[in-house]
Amino acid sequence: MLRYKQFLKIPEDEIVDGILQLHESVFKGSNMLVEKIKSKPKVLINVALDQSTVVGYKIGYELNSDKYYSWYGAVHEEYRGKGVASRLLDQQHCYLVKSGYQIVQTKTRNKWRSMLILNIKKGFNVMETFTDDEGIHRIVLEKKLSTNKMSVNRIPND
Image (cartoon, rainbow, N blue to C red; front, side, top):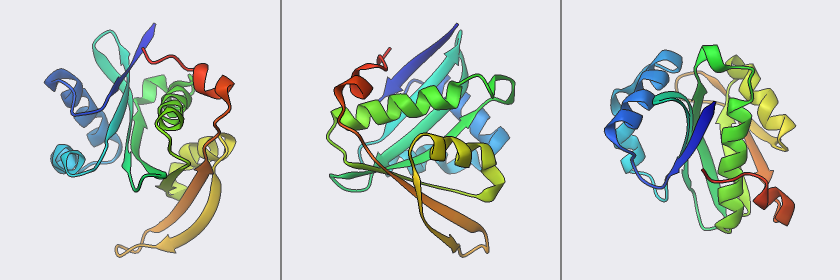
């Protein structure tokens, strides 16, 4: 059974090491991730654990008092298709609603189709696309966060 934890700051080393290993396996370039996280305002880190092993994570930070950026997220390949990413996203959004944010934004690529599809299923709208400085096509998505009490209370913070 998976456990889900939420952190408002950099978690203990064992969790950080698990996030970095998973990040490296999916995105590469994990060597500067902790420093990048430390430089962001009002960071929220959601983690899925199988025993003490990090099998998924979702990291975000505040853009302004109304808008939050859902930044990095990954699920270990053996745990994909089991609702882990969906649960991490729901937990993040539940926290954001309780914290008064109105909008959550994310960016993705066509390469990450499962994340694009999940975001659309969870109510995100494509706002724009652009080609970044490295020539990579990016997709910007946003979701207006609901203040419906049922959606706020259905995901426990465990």
